Image (cartoon, rainbow, N blue to C red; front, side, top):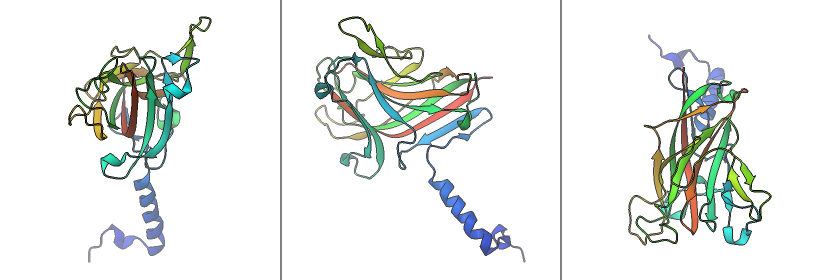
Length: 256
């Protein structure tokens, strides 16, 4: 009689094997090789922040916390979406008419990054937004004037004080993301946060997905095999924007 593979596995081995399979199926944010020279990750945040942190730049060093309302956290999906899930929430009130709010994550040699290697980075980002299409807003519309960017760099993107000796020192990003709808060396503009459907007065949340699959961003890892990836919004809308990042996919293809 022919027997399948499970016919040769003893009960004593079967239970540990099933446990390992269950654990592997439940892992999130793990990198894996695709084609040769390719690394990929998917983060759905069901198990936590998965190494992602949030930050804010393009605002005064002495900003007033109660009017900028800067907030980053790990939370549930908005109820408007009609189903349960976990997300990274980031929010700010753009009083400077230029706030860039972003989430970032470090990738290391332990993730497969090679020291000094050059990669082409592609992102697929799903997020929940309540910004209507075509709505009126101060400084610009709350959807189309909030520019969505993806970025990568061989150094950590952190707030950096510029004009520190002036009367109005500002926080800017330590890597080049560009400004509002302009791109930088370390970031690409891939869209905005306006919802794809609904009226101009519909402020309920809906999911939106943006990507740069057809236009990858080149990034070089540092000498220890580290690089940073980030996703954020450069706002020209002088009001409050609150987004929920629900899924982020990253693919790195090594340039030979």
